[in-house]
Length: 192
Image (cartoon, rainbow, N blue to C red; front, side, top):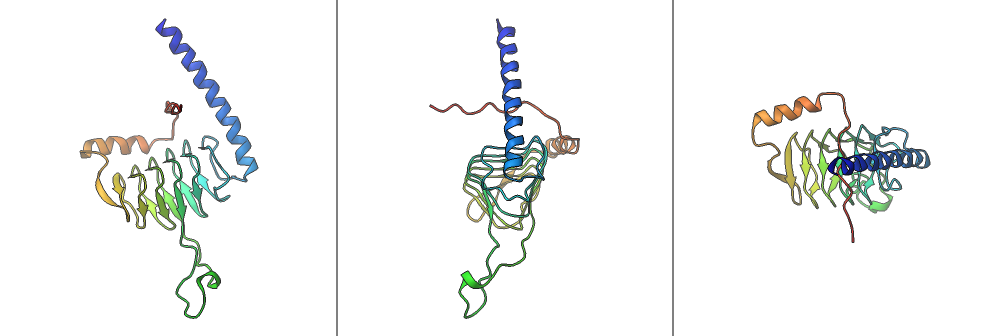
């Protein structure tokens, strides 16, 4: 009985992955996302800049807004309503309203491998979120975040390290240095 259930779950997962792959293939073409890996997934591509670079198994939750010059590393997760924006108006020209002041050159924003940006977090353009870091829901990130740190608040500040000891961090780093590989995705949340 248990083996039959496991077999059914495997078939369902394979079907779900096939549908997900076909859907993202359509979305990549429809929204001109030419620099995203075939394993990238987003529920809503309408608000993603066409120059987005997204590596293997990265994910954008619903209603994310991703501005220009953003790169998502392998395994990156963006929760719902994450925004990577800003740095797009000059405001220091005396006698000129901000709306007419122009824009500075866009800076690159990098979200490195295995980073997780919680729901509603805002990442300002030009920031780097380090490998394996976590940004808490609702945080506003205005400065670079080092690898394997957890940041929260407005503005975001370090609250703790992701791993309790150096041995765990090194083990995780060893895994991240390998070629990206597929694992078991979390099951979708059930809604009522």
